[in-house]
Amino acid sequence: MSESSTATDTPAETAPAEEVYQYPVKIDDAGPATKKVHVEIPADRIKTKLAEQFKELRSQANIPGFRVGHAPAKLIEKRFASDVKDQVRRTLISESYEQAVEKNKLQVIGEPQFDNPEAMELKENEGLTYSFEVEVQPEINLPLLTGLKVKKPKL
Image (cartoon, rainbow, N blue to C red):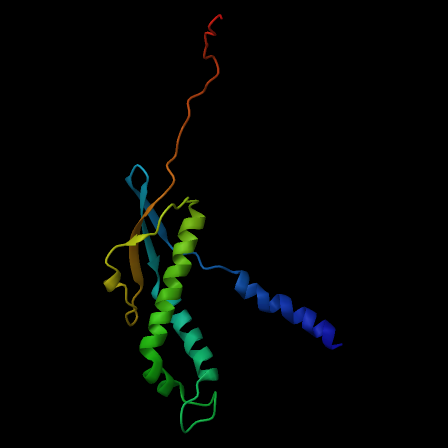
């Protein structure tokens, strides 16, 4: 009987993981083989990820004076806020970058050059907007070769 309950729990647990958040992405041409990509991460997505990360951290945090997993949420937020925000920022930027590349079928050649990386911070109740330039494989359009006459030299 426990096998059947496990089988029914598994699809329900994997269903939310399959749902991928769609980030608003805008792509501009910045040259013959360069694209400028603008990505926006909404404030509600940042809040959700921060809450998930703090919840996970709370269950594992070993804070003196409290049993593991029983420390107050406010204490954990105060102590680990900067580290968690930095980790969530890196995770969201990585996730949105990969989605922008895959969704728009960009054939990236090199590393992205982020515009003003120092300004990419998670701020209270604000979204995060960032942009980067990336080199892509150039599109080569070959003309139609049908109807082309070739003269073969006689030897």
